[in-house]
Amino acid sequence: MCKLTLPPPSVLSLGLVTVLGLGSAVAQAAASETHTVDFTGRIYQSGCQIDNDNSDKTVNLGVASVAFLQNEDNKTVEKDFKLKITSCKLLSNADAEYEAGAIPLELVQLTFEDKKSDATGSKDPNALTAVKADAEGESAQVGIHIKLNQKELTFNSGSSKAKLSEYSITPGESAEVGTTVPFTAWFQGIKDAEPVAGNFKGQMTVGFEYL
Image (cartoon, rainbow, N blue to C red; front, side, top):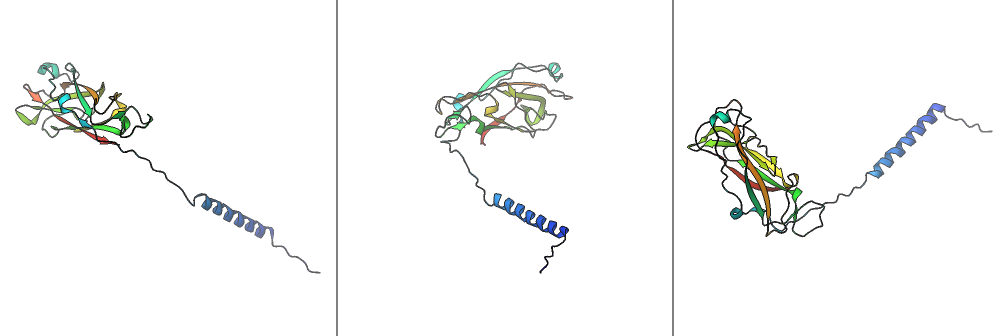
């Protein structure tokens, strides 16, 4: 009679572990053999523009004394001004019913550049630079502060950005009507800086980015 000889228990266990390990590897490989990525996008009819005829080009910020401005917390009266966006139809949010050629507010970002940021002298890195009218390369040592719809812009040493959906902007009913963007501005002193008496001016350019 033939006698069946079984391998030691440790060998059987090793074989079982090996089989189970292979089964797990096969299962993992099968789960990641293919993957599909979908892409979506939107094509707008035309890019946004600033309506130069219906936007404020010069904002008179008024007057203040050197003594008043030496206290950095003192600020002048806020003055209102506006920009009008035209040539594009804006939607209040991305979930609005699709409209061919329109752009959701959350995909439009205004960009602001301080054109006098390279002036010499004391400057507030978070404000627009004011320069002496008779020496455009020299700071008047006060800062021009700007709010977009009651939310202050922070200039990061010369530039700032504002996504329209974060500033409670109400879109106009059509590209032709346009969308009005309200601003306020004022000026105030800079810590440890001596304001320079005389006329001053500042300048910024406004552009668009699409996200």
